[in-house]
Length: 169
Figure 1 (spheres, one colour):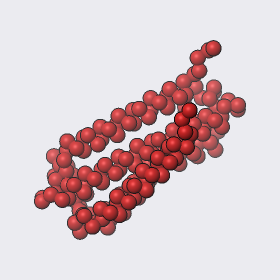
Figure 2: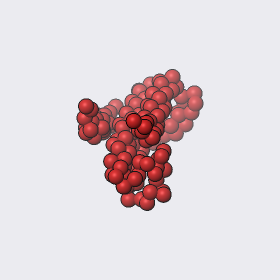
Figure 3: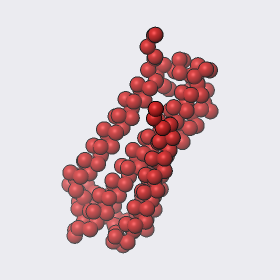
Figure 4: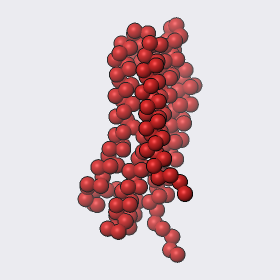
């Protein structure tokens, strides 16, 4: 049997690690940070170090936790506004609470994925700014983005599998 609290613990550790990474890397960035890059990896947007770190901390929170918040608040919506596969079955009174709890728990896995993605993006920006002139590795950005997309697809497929109709016994 798997631990039902696993995504809670993993997310807490990942997020604490992400925040620690931001704090530890603060002084490794120059005062003027190349924060946006074109398709060739050349900088085309700049921020102060403090503004960049604030942006990373805020976006690194809003992006992963936005879906968690939405999935938590869904429980307060009427069933007609909830769009999950086989809604009538899963939101029947005897299954509604467990189904919405499962949706919330599943959203925590997405937040783990999003937090890891944001840490990867910050690592690449940090790495890009250690070079003169700053240059983002497009190959590494594609790898980080690719892992995020693969994780997102896994998340979607597992959500769809979770809310499929149970087979007749």
